Image 1 (cartoon, one colour):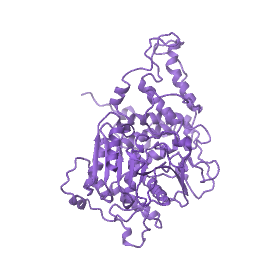
Image 2 (image 1 turned 90 degrees about the horizontal axis):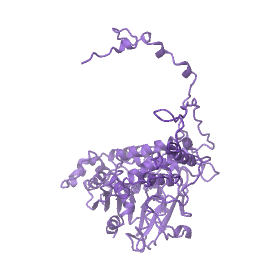
Image 3 (image 1 turned 45 degrees about the vertical axis):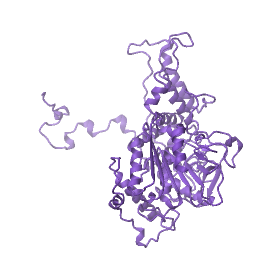
Image 4 (image 1 turned 90 degrees about the vertical axis):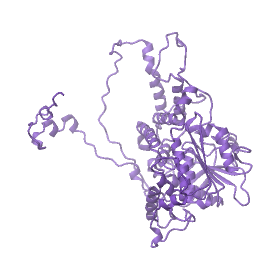
Length: 572
C-alpha cells in the first residue's frame, strides 16, 4: 500500500501540530481574494415571506446585482475542428438556439402544428371560452398560512340534471394541468365551449361510463389553477386592477382545494354527493373530500393516485420546479408584465411527460426512428444528426413541452405540484395538520382528527377552545388492526399501519382504487398500499383493480375500455 500523503505538509502546516489556530493557516485562507471582496450581497427575503393580505401595496424584491459572468468566447476551432467549420457543423446547434430565442421573445410558433404521432387524449391545456363561476364571499382559512385567502372564485362546468332529491351528483376532480372542461355539451356555457371535446370526452356523456343521462356531473378547476379559479395569476388585491398575486399567493394544500369545493357544493344546494371521482392529483382530492366530510360522500374513486406522495414523484416534481424557476424570465414569479418563463416551462413539461408514459410504450410507438430518414437534407448536403430534436421521441417531447408552456401558467404549476408533494393521509401527518389549523383558526369549522366521529367535518361548528375535545384523540392502530385481524395485506409498506389509521373516517364509504402496472409516477405499489390501508382501517367495500398495458400514468386518459368499465361497474 503506498504511503498516505502528508496533508499538513501540503498545506505548509507543522506536521506535528493538532491545533486549529489561525496562525497555522495560509494567508489565502485568512484573507479573501481582493477581486471577490468588493462584492457584498445583502440577503433578500422570499416573495412568499412578504405575503400580507392586509397590505395595500407591495414592492417586489429586487434581485441581488451579481457580477457579470465571463462567458468563454465561442471558438468553433479546437478538439480537431477547423476554425471555420462547414455549414453542416453549424447546423447542429443553430436550430436549438433559434427555438429557444423564439420562446424567449414570447413568439407563438405552435399555431396549427401537430404533434408527431397525431392527436391523442391528454389534459386539456386550453382554457374554455366561458365557464360557470362560483363566488365565495367569505375568506378561506388555509392549512399552511395563518392568514386566510380573501374571497375567491371557483370555475366549474356541469352536465346532466340534478334530480329533485339532489342525490345524483358526481364531483369530478382534475389532475394538475386540466381545466374544468371534462366533456362537451355542458350546461349553461357558451356554444363555442360546449362544442369542444373535453379531456375525458370518451368517459363522460350520455350512455358513457359516467352517464349524464343518469347523473348530474360537476367538474371544477382547482383553487390555485389558471383556468378561471382564483390562483397566482388572479388580480391582487382581488378584483382590482391588473396587478397579479404572483408568488404572494399563499401556499396551498390538497385539503384547501377540497374545502373550497365543499363551500361550492353548499352554495349549489348539494348536501351529499353520489360519488367523488378523481384521477392523479384528482384522486388525492377525492380521498381528501371523503376524509373532511365522510357523511357527504356516497362513493370514492381514486384512479392512479396515492394516499401518501411517494418520494419518486416528489423528486420528479422538484426537478420540474427547479428548471422552471431557473429560467431568468420567471423573475421570482413576477413575470406577468413581461415575457413568461417559456423555456423553463417547456423543459419542466418534458420531464413530466417522461413520467406520464412508459419505456415500453416509447419503444412500441417510436422505436429509434428519426424525424428524417433521408440521406441528404433539403439543401442536398449529407444529413447529419443535430442537437435539436432528431429522434421521433424527441420531437414528441418537444411538442408537448412547447404546447404546455404557451397555454399554462408557470406559477400555477409550481403551487399545484407542491401541493401534491405535501399530500399525506397518514395519521401522524393529519394529526399535525389538525393541531396547527385548529390553533390558528379557533373560530372556523375544525380540521378533523383521524379518530374524530364521522359527523365531525370541516362543515361542523367550531370546537370550543376550552373543551377537552379540542386536544387530539389518541391514535390506536392496534384497535384498527384488531377489527379486521383476518385481513392479510399484500403491501409491504412500512407506512401501512399509519395510513390505515389516517383513513378510518372512510371505512363506511365504498371505494374504488385503480392502479396501472406501468405507471412510474404513481407506482402500482402505492395503489396496493392505499387499498390495503383502507381494508385494514375496516372498509369492507374496497374494489381494487390493477391494469396492465403500456400507457403508464396516462392510462386513465387513454384506456377507455378497461378504465371506463371499472368506473361504470363501480358507479352502477
